[in-house]
Length: 270
Image 1 (tube, rainbow, N blue to C red):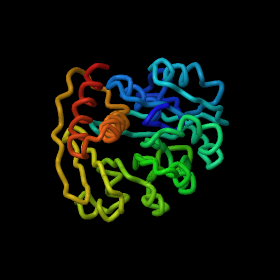
Image 2 (tube, rainbow, N blue to C red):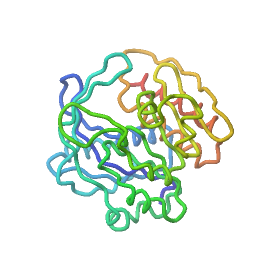
Image 3 (spheres, rainbow, N blue to C red):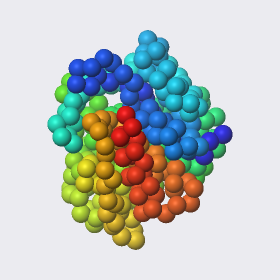
């Protein structure tokens, strides 16, 4: 079994009017896991009608996959304006429950010491589900995008109506600038620490990142990206490489530096 597990819904993405393609945090993190040779496994789901588009692409990464059927597949349409992503929610997708975690997903999660929780909308991972994922001493990492996004169809809405008990279950929280403003009220290290998560990763797009822990706040320099870059999934890849380093015993700052380099390589190779 794997020491690092990825859990979350697959998505069907339509980017700048292109044909539908696989997406979601688990997909982009799995691609990064394959690139860096991480000992990882995926628990995910999509609707049966979307297996050819979404699930087949995930399985093609070579990372072990446990999949279940969803009532509907989460779906987004989006385009980029610089580092900013403009999104529409086409389908919300299913909520992960305690029964999922303790039932069909349990064999994949059993030996995982670190879990990347790839929530895409607020409804995907309620607090009680995160509590179940944490049992047994697992370390959870969550992307802040899933906390601030309202789970409704139409133009993406974000707000701070978040169950703050979520933070009690996390070892790592990854946020971008907008998410940090919504969740913490600013980008200052003291505001990010006020969330109560031991390790906060603030990603700053082309400006690099900031690692905030109880020991300090350390900027992470960006690495050059070559060619016409598609940044979709860069945050998921960053978190995956960071967690892979952490579960190998690397401390937070070197782990983030490793993640920054790997993400630049991944985006450049697309």
